Amino acid sequence: MVMTKMVLQVQVESETPATPPTSLQLLASNQTKNNVDIGSIFGLDVGGTLSKLVYFEKSSPHSNSHTSPFLDSRRRQNSDIPTFPTSPQTSPKNPPSEPRSKDTSNLPPPSPTHNHPLKRINSLNSLHRHSHRAALDEFYKFANEHNTFGQSGIKEPHLSFQSRSLGGSFHFIHFETRHMPSAIDLISENGLAQNIKNMGCTGGGAHKYSEMWRSRVNINMIKQAEMASLVAGIEFVLKSLVGECFTFKPQRSPVTSSSSSPRKITEEEWSRKVQRDSIRDRTTYPYIVVSIGTGVSFIRVDGPGPSQFERVTGSTIGGGTYWGLCRLLTDCETFSDVLQLAEMGDSGKVDMLVKDIYGTNPEALRKLKLPGNIVASSFGKLATKNNPSDGIDQKDLARAILMMTTNNIAHIAYLTARLYKTSRIYFIGNFLRHNNVSCQRLSYSIDYWSNGTVEGLFLEHEGYLGALGAFLLGQEGGEEVKPMKEKRRSRRRSQSAGEAICKEDVERIVKGAEKLKREGEGEEEEEESEGTTGIYGGEVFAEPKKERQRRVTTTYIPNM
Ligand SMILES: Nc1ncnc2c1ncn2[C@@H]1O[C@H](COP(=O)(O)OP(=O)(O)OP(=O)(O)O)[C@@H](O)[C@H]1O
Ligand SMILES: CC(C)(CO)[C@@H](O)C(=O)NCCC(=O)O
Image 1 (cartoon, rainbow, N blue to C red):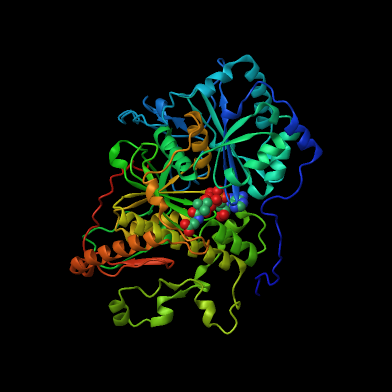
Image 2 (cartoon, rainbow, N blue to C red):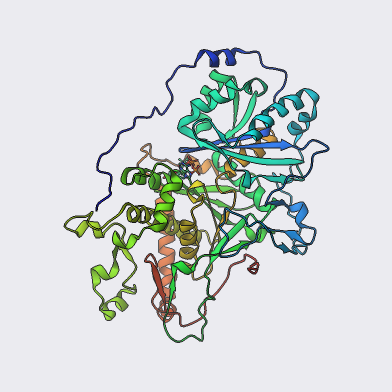
């Protein structure tokens, strides 16, 4: 039976909340603030869908060490350090109860950067004052007593980590951005606003909601640029935390050159979670960051400096697309419900495969250089059926939308990495939260297309890097960090939101495509000899005639 929701429920949600402040809020905003400002413990990232709040809990001189699956880099220089183990059975988000030990003492200490180990952290030092301590204790009591807040606030205690260099712990909360007015109310109603004057904030909402924060609770948003915050957060966790970075690899060992017969590599096998090393030295750069939020941003990071990055392109097909379409086409009410549904679905019922177009004639497929069972067109099968919904469940739709979104991102990420000659792509953003299907598909796709020369990498704090960055940059004086080549940004971007690619993007892509074509022509014989390859289907055929060339600079930590 067709389960597709046929009725479109139009929910009008005020974009810029128009509700006037309540009397309580006005009272709060008019309140004379204390001579105390604990705002420097926060970093807020207000995105198109989710708002992420990081707060830093300064350790009191006698407090015990906070228990956390993550360790900062100072500790990893000792031997026998427990790390975040990686095994096929281990969910990336659920660390097993007994961490294994691994000697990482041979790793060099992290190189100092603009944001590590935060020497100029005067704003945090002032928090030791008696007056601040009382305000902090009040906030920590409130925050630590709850795991949920208001309409959609959720604390994620498993992500908390201690930073010895900063002398305290980071904690993580998120809520839906559409509930911003009630989030501000919550702060106000609990008497927390009077001790906060300035707060580091990033994301589009740092601008959009700044006036609301000021008028309702008299809190000033110290705005940090979105991409600079993301990069600062990434650099910080990569240099500071053991167990932060991981990828997925196949369960079986890769095909060897000695194998003579064609071998199927199924996507299902690409499920072995493997821990990856953090940033070691300059050879890590450049790398690509793909931030999969509501929309998708692609950033090239050239070095550890505060402005050594550039947002090189974007895609409108992101987490918002996935969640938006699923809300329309399924009955799921939460993002985690729809991910669970997708895990059970079969996108093959919806997607049109190459063999649906070509038939199974091996000669024709050989000429096309595509195997028959890869996807030719996402959702294409529905275009040619008499009744498109026949035999299709919500779970199949959820899976197909997930695959379509993920494949599209993987494709752009791979081309971006080729264009900028990088071997590392860090995928971040809350679209990947508890989303093993997409993480595995991204790892698999990137490895496959690049012939093992580029690696898709993931971070445990994937959704909080902007918030962490806003906190960190705020400590450094609160000045907005401008990306490199800011001047080039005077390039004309279309005013139309729908027109995602600007002229320079097109020129770059065309140049890149021409270059790839030239390279491809030069390598034609080699390509031929590598046999038929393809991706997108439930499985991929690889007919390698020679061993893959691995040029990945990442140090491989053997899976234990
Ligand atoms: N609880 C949730 N509610 C809604 N979406 C969720 C949830 N958890 C994960 N997601 C996914 O994460 C996406 C938002 O990710 P993220 O928080 O990184 O982006 P954002 O900051 O809101 O967006 P942008 O950076 O584009 O402004 C959603 O579009 C959805 O795909
Ligand atoms: C608008 C932002 C940067 C907000 O985070 C993000 O949603 C995005 O990168 N969207 C894609 C926009 C583009 O097409 O470049």
